[in-house]
Amino acid sequence: MNHPRNAPQNNHYDVIIIGAGASGLYCALTAGRRGRRVLVLDHANKAGKKILMSGGGRCNFTNYFVEPEHFIGSNPHFCKSSLSRYPSWEFIGMVEQHKIPYHEREHGQLFCDDSAQDILTMLLDECAAVGVQVKLNTHIESVQVSDNNENTRFQLITSKQLSKKEKQERKESNHQTKLPQTGYRCESLVVATGGLSIPTLGASGFGYELAQQFGHTLITTDASLVPFTFTDKTGELIRSLAGISLPVIASNERISFKLPLLFTHRGLSGPAMLQLSNYWHIGETISINLLPDSDVTALLLAHKKSHPKQLIRTVLADYTDGALPKKLLAALQTHLWEDIKDTELANIKDERLIELGATLNGWQLKPSGTEGYRTAEVTRGGIKTDEVSSKTMQSNYQDGLYFIGEVLDVTGWLGGYNFQWAWASGFVCGEVV
Image (tube, rainbow, N blue to C red; front, side):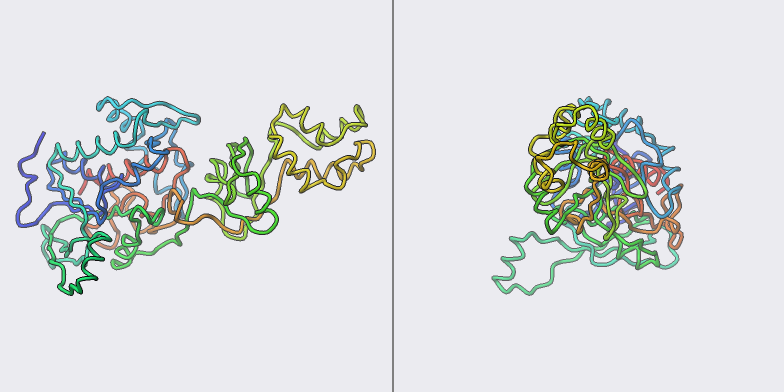
């Protein structure tokens, strides 16, 4: 249903949302349904770019099992209100209403059968149905507060965001003319600019800068849900195993995940590493149990008694149900027990077998870093949530200013949780702006 009062007057809107991503679009359609005049501004040339690339192009749009413990931040309680008021089945209902086919994968993750484009099209159609306007290629020059007028609390000055080609053409023609600017006014301003992850999709720190303009504090930001990188001989070993995947238990002092690990040409990836990266800080050691279903020490010591002439590699190949791929087993042998690879168990000291078992059940590695924002799925850290209302997402320092989605210090696990946070925070904000 179209709302006639959604038509703007002299570039004046009830609500302006900066950011045409998941949280911004969901906030827009929620506010639009209430009859609010809504404008969404984005500097990119296309809405929802991160939605389109998520889940390998299939968009892991939510999860059946969403709990506050699936999120991290300096205030772990902040996300509870939004998540309880907008549970995942609400979004699933919209997906089903739009007849988008989807399927469940392990751990309750929900993906589109066809394409992430289905989710983006649904959001844009819902926005269009309630008169929301989406304006792309728009650079925000400034945001100012108007004096003593609640209906026009904010004034925004924008200019056209030039493409690389347009910038080059202007440079070659020595075109110095300033781009024409457009002014907008609004009662409520929503910052839904996302984080710093994947800059090739247009990620920037604009939302953080705007928050600081209004006195907000930033919790240090880091690339998260991101693969680890390694240098030295460990890095060489890992690179030689690129393409191998196996289930492991990855852990540190704070948390543990039993998920697949993937060796790559750049380091360690796969769900186990991405999840652990949420809880990792530079300089820390991680532990990888390469045989989570076997007590390797007990296995080696038992076989030393029952099959004293066996070799270590034979035990690990034959008595762990092939859990270690052959190439990985060979590489680990070279790395960990090259000096005794052809020595029978009977001639190996118990202490050495105990040490080897402990290593295979808890391989201690110190990443040199991560692949960074270039491949990170999310940004950890952001606007301090103690300075924002958990019920409305409004700034504690400026009436009418709201923050939603990834720009806040709320980071979800891998598995659809960050999208659910986007929908939930967008919903509770859209209900009040």
